[in-house]
Image (cartoon, rainbow, N blue to C red; front, side, top):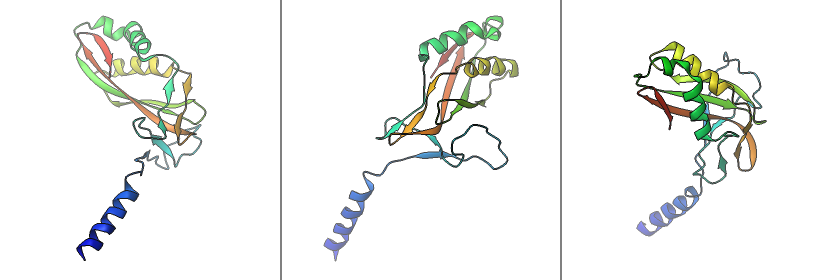
Length: 153
């Protein structure tokens, strides 16, 4: 009996190991996001898992960080600012930004607005892919501000 149980457990485990973790974002019915290819399948993709490629901006992360530090006037006016936050961007299967919003807000509404303005201006994206197919996906950008300088994580 023990051998049968162990054999069944091993068989079950062998079937689960190649399984892929895929997270989807729940879009509420009253949430009007225009431009999604499939509102029931908006993925959070994890490139460390086989078959998943996150959406990628054509502009390098370092350049985005430089633009944030140059274009966000609030940071220049508040050089001692310390804060943190997070921005989420939904990119559809065509590589178009369909939503950009602050998930974790900073202490300043004006700072959030200026940060979102930079992220919203990022127009060229390669869509995320799941098993080779281009899909709607969400990407998160966390940032930290120390002494008026913003750093992406």
